[in-house]
Length: 118
Image (tube, rainbow, N blue to C red; front, side):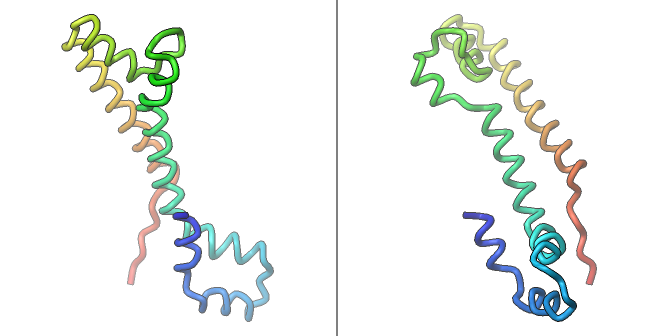
């Protein structure tokens, strides 16, 4: 849905200018659509990665927290509430936060934001 909205927000004048310059469909996609979608792609990647790292509900509901399919978050919750090791669980949550922040930072370094100067 985000991609559709971003594509629809591209100024029609850009497509018109590209058509006048003789750009084919691939060139319009490559030079107009992809650069316009870069911020949305970056945001989607960060949200998807952090969501995958902190998933809790679906595996916990499906397995009841049992088995070898435990996620990092399920292990942290078990440490805190089943084994009463809240300090260790708190440290594990901070480690997860640092991992998410490092992945987001690396993603921003790999796909830098374009600065628009006027």
